[in-house]
Length: 397
Image (cartoon, rainbow, N blue to C red; front, side):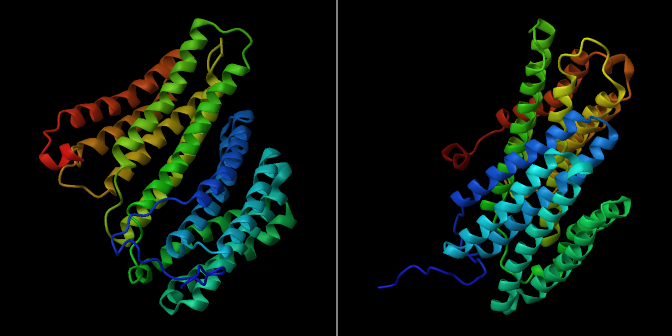
């Protein structure tokens, strides 16, 4: 009688090619909770310093958190395991994620060394996982070797950056992040020879990350209300519009994007994965900006309205581009050109709103126009979804 293996060796996952539906594991869901704390601290920093410089620091903090998450997500996609080893490596990764959250609370200037060391530690743990896979799986070696080389280059750049702590240190860390972001692209041709990535679990995994940042958007509205002592009708309407924007993003993403896998092919998979980065960053930034816009009796500060408008606009544009990467079923009701074009136009208009003082000066009017642009996408979704003629297969599903 066979027994479960306590310490499993890496093995490529062929479940998708065998037609097996895969689900996100409880361990992965628990791991995501640590990114709830991390994104909360990063968003709080942007809320406290809502400026273009604050946005740059926000990006420098958000990208490392994202890259740790996606690195471990991609490893589990290839080498999902039920053994003790994956639990231990997950726990080890949780520690630098906690460190990233703690030092992000102090901002880039004060917490830079801790941020860089936390990120570098996480990257080295992930590199060790890729090394195990390369050692045990010959088919994976061309891909894994490139991962290892790129990530070691990243660590070689980021470690000195942590101790320099000057302007040069920031640029070294930025170069390390660029190395990490570009490394997977060098493996495109080799990944085509590996088992195809999941069309069930992977979209669900990314959808859960979108839910995390949408939750932070709601927290931003709550924080904005908490800073105001007296609740008035305009304040209530502003908060309602802030929540409505978050609800609208949920509506658009899961009606248009989250329910569909990317098109077959490594290139489409890369585009789909990378486009989630500006999307989740924009949603998190929008939440931080809205919390600063709520409750202002005076005119909105120029940088506040510009940053909120750019965040909302970038989220819509990212969703438009994401829609172009998605696989179309026979019964897909959305138009392949009109649907992403509506989102693209709305994103451009939202971005331009930040420089339109006549409308953007009032918080209520500003949020109302932004929501109107988001609502257009929701209305289009209702129109095509409920106007679709259902065949017997769709009616029974």
